[in-house]
Amino acid sequence: MIIVMGREVTDGQVGTVVNKLESAGLKANISRGIERTVIGAIGDESRLDADMFTSLPGVESAMHIAKQYKIVSRESHKENTIVDIAGLKLGGNQIQIIAGPCSVETQEQMDLAAQFTHEAGCRLMRGGAFKPRTSPYAFQGKGVEGLDMFRKAASRYKLPIVTELMDVRQIDAFLEYDVDVIQIGTRNMQNFDLLKEVGRLNKPVILKRGMSATISEWLMSAEYIAAGGNHNIIFCERGIRTFETAYRNVLDVTAIPMLKKETHLPVIVDPSHAGGKAWMVAALSQAAIAAGADGLLVEMHPSPCDAWCDADQALTPEELKKLMVTMGAIAGAVGRTL
Ligand code: PEP
Ligand code: MN
Image (cartoon, rainbow, N blue to C red; front, side, top):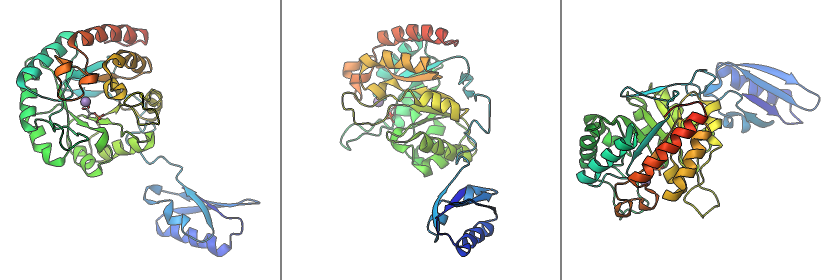
């Protein structure tokens, strides 16, 4: 951390800052310039907060220079991390497309969805049993019964399952049904107690980006999970909220190379919640894989017009098959496989 003192600083004020640093176990390096005195903190600054200093007399500003996220940062781990999901690799050369309905509805719908996911060539399946809905009166998901339907349908095709965890009270059921990947939704990206609990589990986690979260906040949320010991984290860009109202969210393609630079963990993209329309999914998926994403999380429903949730953005089974062909070509163009 560096602490910049104001123009009229006194020796006493510098001394107060130095004492505060020393009582926190750090050393101070005082650099007196013609106009400004700058104090550098030497040692472990993770316990320091800028506010501890900005409130002191004579201090103009204080800022961290070391990154607040450590385990997830590429500085701490140069190689790409490959997350193992029931033997499948995510984050390696092979692109993974995770497909399935927004929500688990019926056994028949899930059986068909699993069949179509498998037939399209996807190796993982998604589906929400617990749904975070904007309205409390909208369908809230089938809950534990939904996990049961999902597990039965996916097991027939040996598809690992990805489903959203909304509350710590659901963890026992997730373990009972052996959910392969826990999804933390956009609305829970900063639910720190939930992140801490997931950090204690030995299960891969897809961490979606909060709809108004900065890259740094997103990385810090991942650090919460990692700090608990669970390093199997996959970032999922799902579109952010901006001034634009013509589509559901804005897919932040720029986040892909940025995250790839900042973290060693895999990055996937959800083109369905980004655009909010089925007809946009192919274009956004192409952009995502071309920009370096390691996979996609795509909504597909056996009969989109009958979907209980997010009907507008669900691909038909046929559209998913077509998307897989296009993804194969894009993957090849960027030196990867599908
Ligand atoms: C979902 O994937 O079903 C979902 C609710 O997405 P998000 O958290 O990105 O809105
Ligand atoms: Mn959805």
